[in-house]
Structures are given as structure tokens and as C-alpha cells.
Length: 462
Image 1 (cartoon, rainbow, N blue to C red):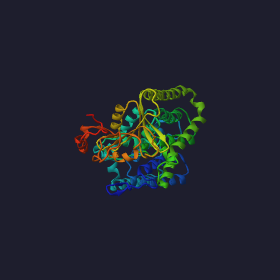
Image 2: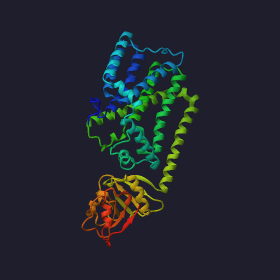
Image 3: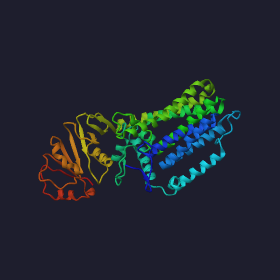
């Protein structure tokens, strides 16, 4: 797959997705800014300028709106921290934009001309007045992500967010396939749950808040000031980039992560390392200056308590939902399943297995219907392989999956909204669930008009 914009190739520079390349560029640019602002050796300054120009050009050819916004956010944070939050008596109060103003003007004009001529600036702006599907689909995904969090506050399982959304939460008319929630933080929240999400937010908020206090309230060495400002800028870019795409993906570290392209996987691991290393550097400087933070301990402790308290509702809601019945993903030897556990103590042998292939219904609606019909059973919906199913139980074959009836002759079979012509011979003991209001194919009407057979039970559920 090649990413394009109006017929122009969007370059990934080793990444499969150009948005991920833009996120890496956003992580590297603050280092260049800090070198030319804080370092006095002109050789290093000019080297940083050269690298910075290359990064700007690379960013343009990714055509990444999230990357552009991330760099803008980093620039604003850098100027704010350097010019307004640094102590007034600090020796580095003045911001040195470029080592040479003529070079600065030349580079700025050329970069702007390239950005305009290739359509990069138009792409970065026109989505505000005319949002395209790339934007609207993200909003739909975000809405679905909040629904998934409400249904599964303890998480749906690592690597399962895209599959669960596509199968159960995506609008019926949509045929898109997602691997993640196209948002690094929503993906983490949906897969790992509210508690770990709040703890992750605490890992970001606490060291960054302490770093801002140190920069604003205390005189630090030039080296520590530069590292803290750079680190906070990188974290700002990471947050914006993560909101725009699933570039920071923990699943890339797994043995069976689903990443086929080896270079892309290596680059994604390096990108994931950027916020980890940045937070480690910020935390190290904060710890080395901990004696300066004692008087601000109440603020930092209060911040930590707030985030820890936010973890409590996630645990409480999760326990309440688990007692009342929730969807939860569990691993089986044969793959992944979506399991519904109804109220009360249910025997493990009471299983209802759903094989769904209904064009008229999305599986979320189908699962809700199945729970009402079989309130005393555990409902399993295989998402992928069907080998290794339990030996006994009920099996509900939906839509075209009725064609697989011979494979499950040992089960108590139910056929729901079959999208196949009536067979010559029905399975013994078959029970049929008839839904006339969803009979788009017309096959159900053929079935209903047939002479009744002892093995067929027609249930008209409108």
C-alpha cells in the first residue's frame, strides 16, 4: 500500500505510514532548536541548522497534518518556556532565532515556497473548512472508542482494539478494517483499560509538571535548562502525534505483533523509544534537583493523588460491570474470542457459540439479541479461527455461516437469518430463529412458506 495525496507520493522514510515518519521528525526537531539556542560552538550550531533544514523538507514530503500541528505545538512550547517561563535573571533570557539572519530568511523563503508549491500547506489548512474522510473517520473512531471504554473499562485486550471496533462498534454501512483506533492514546485506553490509562497519564504529567516548576522557579545550569526545555517540547509533540495516529504502539514489541514489514517495525520501536528516553531524562534531572522541589511538594502530591483517584472509578466500574454482565475478551489456544458473562454463577459447560456472517446486522446488535434469547449461557463469538471450539453446547449459525452446519453436527444448532437457500435435508434437532423485519435476502420467506417439519422450530422475532 502506498500513501498518496492528489497523486503525489507521501514519503515514509523507512516507516510504512508517513504520519509515523512525521512523528519521528517532530521528536528530533527540538534537539536542533536547543543546540542552536544553547550551544556556543558555531560548528555545532551550523550542523544543527543543516540537519534542521533536512528535517523540515522531509516533513513537507510526508504531507502529514498531525506532524505539522505537532511541530507547531513544539515551537510554541519552546518559545514559551524559553522566553516567558525562564527566570528573569537567567543569562539565556534572549532567544537567538538563527546564527545568521540572511541565512534564516533564505531558508525560510525556500522552505515556504516548497511547502506551497507541492500542496503541503493547502493540505494542512483545508481540512478545517472541508473535512475529508480521514478526519471524519477519526471522529467516528473516537466516538466508538468511548463506547468501547464504557462497555469494557478494564480493556479489551492487547492488540484487539481495531478488530473489536470493526466487528462490533463500526457502523453497519462501513466496510473499513482497522488494526488500532488510529489514536495512540485511545488505543492504549481501549486495550488496557481506564486504570492503566490514568497511570500512564500520571507518568507524563508528574515529571513534566516538576520540570516546568524547576524552569520557572529556580536557576538551573544551562545544560539542565536546555535538556528540560527540549524534553518538554518533545513530549508536547508526542502527545499531538499520538492523538493524530497510532504511531506509539506497544504491540510492536510483541513476538507476534502483526507487523510484517521488518524495517517499519524497527523504526516504530525507535519511535516508541523517543518518549520513553525523554521521560527518563526529565525524571533524572528532576530527581537530581529534588531538594528544590520540597516547597512545591504539595502541588505535585496533589497532582499525583488526582490521577490515582481517577484510577478508582475504572476499577469500580469494571467490578460493577463484571457483576452485571459485560463483554470481555479472553485468549484461547485457537485465537481470540469475545465472551459475554451474564449475572450470577454460570456453569462453564453452558456455552452458546455464535458464528456470525450477517450483512443485515452488525455483530454488536447480534450479540445483544443473542444474550436476550439465551440469558443463562456464556456467549462466545470467535473472532478469527473456529478450530478448538468446546465439544458441547449450542451453536448459532448466522447468515452465510449456515453453510458450515455439517461441521458442527454434534451441537444443538440454531440458524439465525440464514442468507442461503433452504437445504434438501436439515440437521437433526435444528431450531430456526426467523426475523422477518431483517429478511433482505428473501430466503427466510422461502423457508417460512415450506411445509413444517418436526425438526424445524420457527420463531418469529420482529
